[in-house]
Image 1 (cartoon, rainbow, N blue to C red):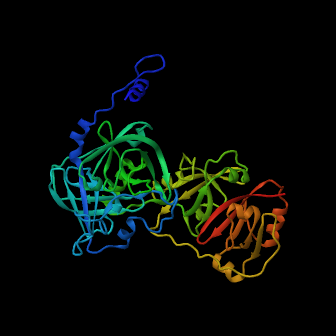
Image 2 (cartoon, rainbow, N blue to C red):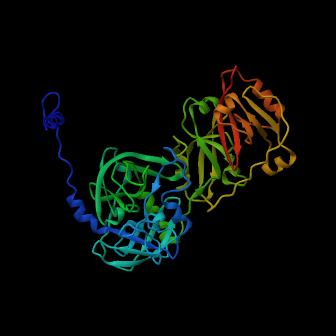
Image 3 (cartoon, rainbow, N blue to C red):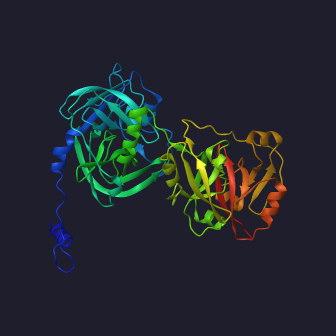
Length: 472
């Protein structure tokens, strides 16, 4: 007990002896005024779908910190123990639980797309215990936003805030239904802004340490003014429960999606038709850049707006439509937010020189097809100074690929350490496309030892630049 008192004294007084304690925020008014606009959502399906079966405990995701990344957190009910700890009755329909909130007094509700995905019946339960069967107006998987409508009027609604005014360290509050416990409030702070997550290219997530658990999915994130600044969507967890890393969709992104779903039933986005990757220090050095700002173009789809506008593999996009591209994750969001058909100026660094291209954006297709990878072949050449054994593609492989390339038959030394492996196809070196093996070896032989070279590699349907330092 004495030890605890000493710790409290240190926390309350600075080195000069002046008191530094501050009162915590009072969340009671926010709970009273805003809790009524938060709803509980239950989804019933006639039978379990593959999506539900994979929702928990996330089969197929590899182990380790990266493999544990970002579990979505509705509560899928198939296989979840019943009230007495046993399996649910065989006759019961599969269900899932989540949260949502009213954005209009006439019954429009925002939630996560994954909460209502595959549902045959969606029930919205208000804080006053009234229940309504909801109509799904539309859902957008890319942002994980869904818009529902219930037949009611005079309902309480949230106030939309401005997530751009959020500051790291600011207090925020979540209200939702963790584990089905309706109108549960938890509090924390903003941990980071504009967070880019794996496979989530269109949302600059708000990261918080607010306690979020299964069932909170789709619920609102409030600032201390009582304004909604985000939709709680994902958590990082090793257990499926809260571990201090929670992520919310900024409300301005969600409202834009909701407005499009309400008006047209779908979301349209600008589209370039390129594959990009992050610029590492080594790649920047190989392109003669002094910093790593920008998005490196690793592939350009045939017939795409990017190809028609003159973008090339190896270009580094530094500005799009007047907005700086500091990281590769900036580009998809900015392009997607640009209306299809608009001609946007695109500033690129190409072979050490800046140039501006004017590109008319297309509309992002629902699904994009990719060319199939070439098959492995036979025959060998000598191991080059990167540790690669290469062979030219056969005429049939070149026809299937649509371009020249060199097939990797073996990778050793620097190339293997950089991640090059058998079956990869080398398409280019730095800013030059591969023509044939002799041209590639001649170009490689002219480079000084210790220099970093960037190889454009195709693996499966994807292309990326791989930096390799040339040995002595």
